[in-house]
Structures are given as C-alpha cells and as structure tokens.
Image (cartoon, rainbow, N blue to C red):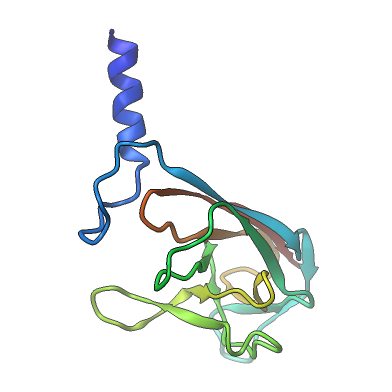
Amino acid sequence: MLTAAVLALTAAAHRPPQDPQCPQDRKPPKVVRAAIASGDHQVARSYAALGATSYIATFDKPLLVRVGGPGTRKGHPRHVVFTCEGCIFAPMEQHGFDDFTDRAKDENSGKDLPAAYDTKPARGIFGVHVALQVPVVAGTYRVRAEPVPNCGEKAVATWFTLTTR
C-alpha cells in the first residue's frame, strides 16, 4: 500500500504543468523524446582575455537533436531548449540556425537567459552552435536538450558531454 502511494506521488511530480488551455485528459501522457543526432563528446581549447574572470571554449560542431513523438497541434509548434550545467553560453553566431535559434527568455522578466537557447526545427533537426563561458580552463560540462511538452505530453531530455582544456 505504501509503495503504491509513493509511486503515485512520483508520477504526479513528473507530469507537465497544467495549461489552462489544455483539456483535462485522464490518459497517460505521450512521450516526446530528444535523441542526439550529432555533436556529443567534443573537446575544445579554452582561452581567456586579459583581465577576464572566465574562460571561453568554442566548439566546432553544432549540437543537434531529433525529437520523436506525436505530431503537434496547429499553433503549438515543437521546440527544444538547450541549457548548460555549470556554465553559460557565450554569444555566438548561429551559422545556418539564425532563423531557428534564440536565447530562451525568463518567463517573469522577459530577459534573455545566458545559459539557455530555445530552438525550432530546421529540416527536422534542432540545433545550436555553442561557445561555453566557464569558470576554469579545463573541465567537463553537460548540455541538456529538452523538448518542450505540449498538452498531454511528457518530455524526455538528452545530455551532451563537452570538454574544455
């Protein structure tokens, strides 16, 4: 009995937030899963400008993911948010993704989030070119790519591993 209660509480904690425009649905959510297409396990040299308090590492290949799951309703396009764990994304040109990639915005203030990109699909692929701004010259960092779920969906993220030296 206790196990069933714990499982029910855990499942409720992983449901997407209720959108007032979403109809109440008793069916289990459909899974929307990000899968790495390219760009994982890259290594880049980091450098710092004189007087800078952090290092910059620019990675050659873009981080690319495909998203598997149900199609989207009209007016609710699929998008993926890339976030960096323990670092921020330094400003960088998005060669080929200019029309599909933007800084993610803080919901309350509307300001750009320095550690997040919000991407739309370009030919079925979600991608971003990254330059990491990091606190130390050498380290390993994780970048999360998570689809944003629509009504009745549950997102499953994937993680890129990037190394600076």
